[in-house]
Image (cartoon, rainbow, N blue to C red; front, side, top):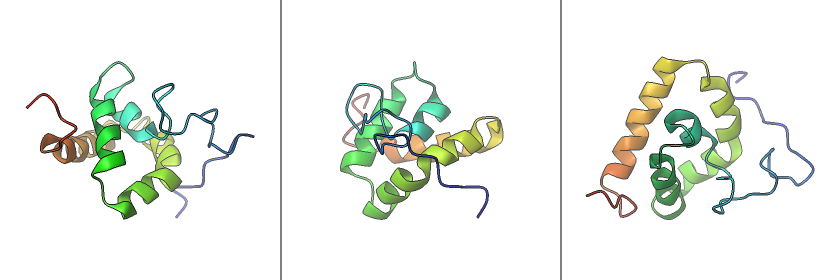
Length: 101
């Protein structure tokens, strides 16, 4: 579907993240979480930990393949961001990654 197009890849093959992968520097692969929460909100890090360790494989793979383009699509859609934030908050609420419990 046109709404979620393939994101262009940079020369490193990392989809514009400079090869950051899921390491700490740059927050690679957490495009949607950073768009939804903002770079300064540490909840995107909680979601990343959940995605890496507890998320179903199909969701991890979908996020890896379509997340960057989806983050671009929701950038100017506050209602969509609110729904995604609710889902992400729900996922990490009972997570081992959520240390605020």
